[in-house]
Image (cartoon, rainbow, N blue to C red):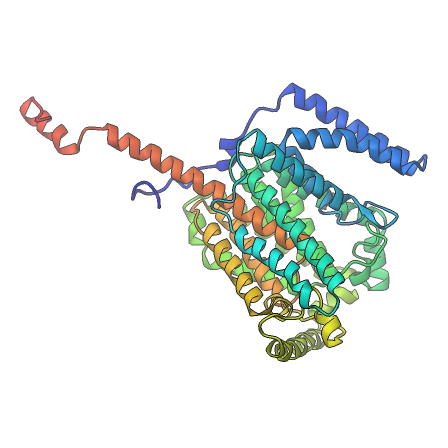
Length: 487
């Protein structure tokens, strides 16, 4: 509840409230850290000394992670767009290593320097319960070992987003991590362009398997890559609205055009459906932005950039690629929809065969000897974790929506709401719940909305104190008329 029933100030900016000067000490540390990263890369790539390179690059990174939760989040956001592309012999991946170190660093810092590690106001409880229930489900699964280790990934993700919530929701300046993510994704796209990946997409017409060819040794599912690209578009638009460094907004406008181009080139129809649903809700609630002129102008400019990027793809030779034709060709669209409906129909039968316990985490395909899992997150969770698991999934989205829609600030509400709608709609056509993108962006959006809600409540309390310190209007009137006060 807000402190008073008064019109809220829609110009409240939680980014400005958390803004802190960049100290010379941190500038020196960042410079040393970048030099160590370059030295580690040179030792690994040029001198073929990966262990020594990891030590040279890892020690200053570990020091920064232990010092600052925001630095930890920046490290996560830098390696997250790269997924598993930075790896050692296909086993040791940078995103997992940085994620584990950053999680430990944030929780240790919050516990011993801030005095507590909290989940108040967060939607994290259902995620914790899902992680615990999936671990328990290994007891009755067909392949207990595989189910147990699959469940451990969800346990790790639950600790990861717990740290993420504590780093953003209460004090941290989250604008730097968002900058790092958008910049990292832009580097991935530019690397693909400079390596000739886009030209090979045009010539060979196989964007579904060439999308991340230059950033990962393995084939990457285009739907999974799009699940990182669409939130990057939302982040770029949000940065264009809120970034305190106005000269950087030029970069975010470029991202708002480049990212939709890559989304279309992946041919990921489920991600496009989620993006379109989020934009449709934006159009239907456009009246919210009319009250905040800056947000209105930003959304319009971002929309023009997105339309321009998509028009470029559709009017160029790239439109003849196999991936884009998956979107444009009605026959291919119908075939994809029929395949998904067939998987859902079979999955519904399997759910009723084991309604209470399910098959165990990631054991659906093994149990029923299916070639593909159900391309629907709620149904797949219900099939693997039973009806209780499906209930936890919808409970999470209910708590997520409650957190997200609590704020009235247009930029934060648009950003968080768009993420929630995108993740939910995309999950209805492609299972992404177990992916890092689902956990990271859902909790990140909720934490940003929570911060905005806190700023609004603090402003309402300040306004209430101002009203409380003023004399009642009727007493002021009586003093003006008769020359004395009844107080």
